[in-house]
Picture 1 (cartoon, rainbow, N blue to C red):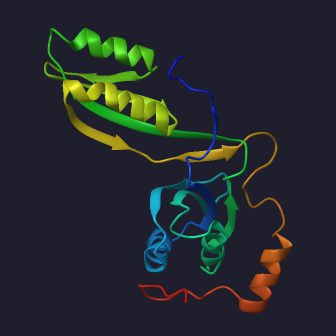
Picture 2: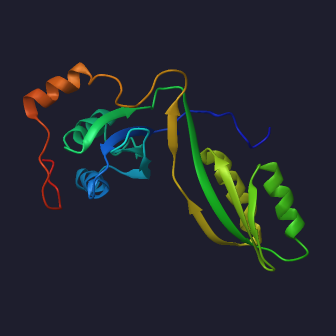
Length: 204
């Protein structure tokens, strides 16, 4: 089977993929990570970037489900004033991707072997030097893990991975175009969102 695996991705055992739409303001990432630290939620990966809506950013968080029930993760995220919408993709049919750059030791004798490996994994060569090569690969975690394993015997000098980003297949979205879910509206009406304050930001 070609390592360029099917785009439909299921979560690894015990892992949950959560997408949070947050306000694009300074300190939001630190407040979210501080909340996870205080609550003891184990983050496997966290990526953040601009969304399709001006003023909003999209966080994709992969959480170890053994460290906390996913319902508790959602509830705690909604307590932060900067969080607009939270979606658990764990049981959804989703497309997930990660990007990695790998700098591998090489020489004139084995460079062609690494080029062959890159071709099998559909990785791009983004830099070649006399004693190293940088490969760029996009795929799910298993595909990237496989390429890393194949490169290890040659000697990996540097490895950088972005972490997972994900979208639900089909017409369903995780954007804020849809109205606020009723159960979340009721939760906000009864408890409200926490106001902003100096870090560390308390969510208790």
